[in-house]
Figure (spheres, helix red, strand yellow):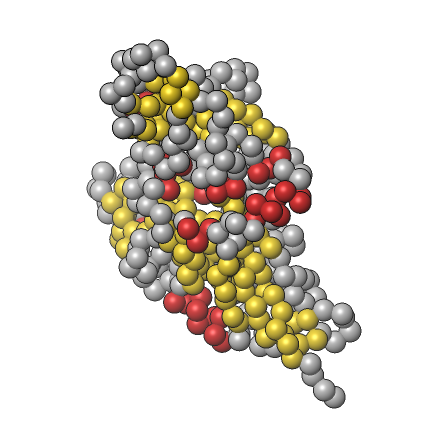
Length: 403
């Protein structure tokens, strides 16, 4: 009996940043399929990111005769495969274990990313973006590996330009993006918000819910109450209990020390329960990443994702060859022009989208001599975030200095 061995696609990841895709005020999402295909001919995400397998992932790729290739849209992974008996599909020539996961580092090539990307500004210290295909960890819809944004909190907090919310984080149908600093509930008061449908295969953009606390190995967690050692449990992303060395102090206001160094990278949850007065229960979920580099993000794709639509294999073990998608939204900012020819800086009346290509037409301002001056688009101009520190300010500005 002869066996046909060939190479097939194991999976693909397409990363779509709308700073590169949109043209002025024309959104890529509104284009026809033919127009989108034409845009993609000039698109190259390698202007912004490098995607690199972790050391452990590279071992898995090598062991299973996989080939990874960086493309203008992301990555494609091929695998040595053979025809599966009784089917018209293909299966890996060297079978995987059921708990296999592929982890890639998302490293920045463009350090100006936050200037033109609708991502949160505060709270980045000690966190990492983790994009994955496990809908059990947080709700999402195939083919997207970004989570649904959080709901409106209703606790009086301010939302800042670029922050995203959804109407229902378990099954989102509407996306809200803040255009100015606001505490409004977008469902009842849309002032300061932009609303868009998230139905069908509409984009799910990277957002706050994709950002996770980053731990390197020794985890220090602040003990808010008097904990007992047997009341601390750690579970992995599959929900299984793991047993690291845990040092739990008996006095208040000190830290729980957890030694996670023997365990593989991934999601873990520390669950603390105190039966003493006052009774208290809390959880802390973090991403363990022991490599020395501090990347912008991680892409982690499990072979079995607890959701058939996200799995890399079919139930019969044949290759599904899924194409995952990760969207980044471009920022909308007020454009502020500073020039010695202006009496005062000129600011646009509304926030406008930042794009590499295309222009916002008919953008002019009067100079000191009351003459019209054509204004350029800002591109990656420095972002001025006065709204973060000035209680009287509610805008983010792209500031352009004209000669």
